[in-house]
Length: 288
Image (cartoon, rainbow, N blue to C red; front, top):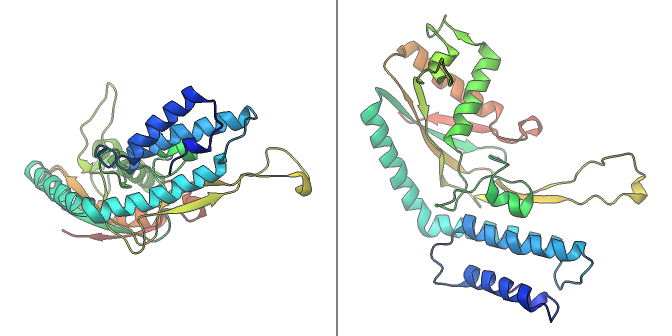
């Protein structure tokens, strides 16, 4: 979509910049672009429109309308990227990760999770934030949503600590920092490793739109209020993710089995943002 044609004539410098960005987005030779990187460029245009609107200048397309267009295009591009290319790449990538993990760890399990309720991960990422203020993270190279290992491991550690406490002496014979690692002067190497989770399938779409209507910052009459809904991308229901969990030999088999059980519990409780309102609920299956 050529956005620059909507701007007032006479804005030559601005239009030349917009045309350049738009030509990069639309160029069939711009093979370095994927849904994540093109979203950055579209976000620049979107924020430029916002600046013009704030200055009271007339623009042929509104900030809200272009944001909606960007989200629709993002969903189409992510699905096309996955179906055209990423499916085989991701499966191969996971197999390679599995081979490397198995050469370095004594116990390795492949975990498959299905998103039962919409998922939003990494809400402060630079790709979706520029255009939508929030939204699930998109892989900068592969151009598809994923779950970073840091999010999985951090959620898992927090869940275990909250539910079962810092001492796992009665089950694993260890404290929680001995299992998950610890930074600082008392740093300890983790006995568990979790990889990034990549999508391997979906039912109708990998990503879908979500809308949040902000609450009022102060008391105001309903007839005087004009809340602006926030739209952003989330991972759709029925999306399948796969990742690996690896354990060092220092962990007893009883402890490993319990940790795998807790991973299943975590997925039922929910991962990511907005879990209190039902987001991020999954079902897990261990593919040992």
